[in-house]
Image (cartoon, rainbow over all chains, first blue to last red; front, top):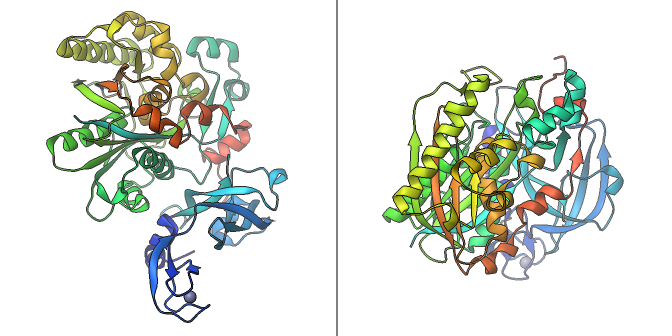
Length: 131
Length: 348
Ligand SMILES: [Zn+2]
């Protein structure tokens, strides 16, 4: 469970998928970084990650960490977005029998977790099948 | 000229059939289906709420509008199911769209008419020249108490509209509001489910306010039912919109494109706004559309829209409402539905 302050700092990525592109070599970083791990450049321009891509690998979680217990079982996947960026996230609105490597998915805004009944609700992206 | 420059709809994929609910409570499904003209309703997943649906519907509206979201000067969400009692839904929406920080936002509530209230205010601010673009959203994940008549209809969905002065897909020709104080439906603070006045919710409430608002706007604009290609009324069940249409002199063909309730249920603040999205999906340039909402408490907002040539350029830029409604559905059994809607809870 993120603290409210960490969650707040991550809003540009969680809500708007903001990333940075190295002006030296073009590599995209999500979340943004200060130094390019590919070419060492410190010059970046703001960009956004692509909002669709394909599943590279996935697994079904049956015994999740505490904030996600009520959501089990659920699928997690690593997705290669159309701009080459790879990110991890839950895959929802998809029967487990329809999960497949190469399956097209897109980002959708969802509740990620909540701090009990009285705490903050954390929002962000999950993957849903591209239809 | 001011009007709608982009619109978007969002409906969760989960559904539950009337039979599945009737089975649990021992009621007669065929008579419910006939009586309410209702077959199934949408159900939000545990990770979907008024905010998430508003964000997705608004992103689709932005795609159709083709604007820079940073220029949205006001973003309003109307709902009776805001996720927080204290903390705005609109801030999450505006932040997710990239409309912050130069953006005015507010969460509105007025039973099922909170969505059209947002549209009314956003439209008016654009018309007054205070903002360049305004966003009005109607969204709900409504709950009916287990076994209550409302449980068969209370559904989830969102519709979003962006208003501007240029590149309208539908120009605003007239607006009108009709409102009185009436205890036909309510929910007190800390209560989980709403209460309603039973049959009292029909005649003096829904029918009186909608007919008065429809007649009021037609009188104000010098129009009559034959001047409209389509009309959308609030849809608490399947029957009411046709009945109120008949009273006012509208025919079935005018009502049907925006009539989603038989497969969708009552999405409360999203109800008549979603009907407007499915109507825009099929409307032709030059068509005139009448929209009349209803919210218990009680009041109706009425709008006259005139569709422009631009509709043909934008409607395919985002999913069409009937397609969202008819495809990728997943049917739930009552147990799963009860879990999703927190009607049953795990021991702590
Ligand atoms: Zn680089």
